[in-house]
Length: 363
Image (cartoon, rainbow, N blue to C red; front, side, top):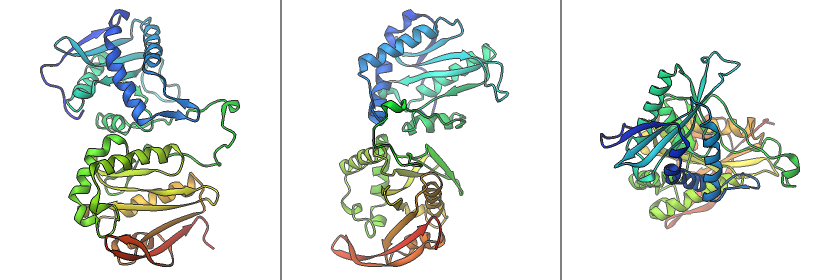
């Protein structure tokens, strides 16, 4: 949704309950996306059925439409809805001078076959135009932490993260084996020095990520056991494991991006919560190397592991002749602990792995 939609798209405003039935397929498309990227919101909080999700959402729409300032923008092609935005207007922030009234974008949904065609951006333009007519200049939006595509879209449209929303259940509903103190999932994203960023990987990244692997295969194969034979299906399976890893609180994998394009990957090979330790792995496109990008990415994960997760030990392993990779832990003050001889198979050869570690408090 990087551009604006073509002239064949028509927009119309509405604020009546009679319009809601036609929106059900478009809402269901959003619900299907939520099911794919966030099957569970948290412990014992699985997804709803499609029917129940729409029933509850529709009841909210009906209640919100009691307010005459609430409005819908519906995008249509050949008189059929392909997307819509639903906006409510309420009281402003108490702590910040953001205007006398605050709008909230309750829903922005576009049918999958019309995404990446500018429909979302066009709807957002129409929302801002109507808000200007109503004298409202501030709007907030909530997305799930796993919806990286939506986060990138809103950031391109000028929004920035201002709040972090936490979800939880009453103590009586928590599982008995509660998580260790300080344990939590990944942040939605980091800006890192040098103009790059880190964000969560999601299943929708499969095409872009695999294209990068194909382009970098010759560069990656000497160091990454999976690189030489990685297929599209392997990449999709990897991203599904990433989702499972994040949901299991076993670490996370992030895309290293520049100009909103994936340039590499960094993440954990699991987290040993009992011993408060983790290992970090990473790879970066050849053209992005030599600019300190991966050093800063590793630094961000190290800071997160020590300050947020309160881990005690972080380990990095790399082939002993992979000098670029080994330069990163050395640069960040990791301690060389030794070499594991012929510890990893790369194609038809076995390589030695150099082991580096960093402790929360150095002895």
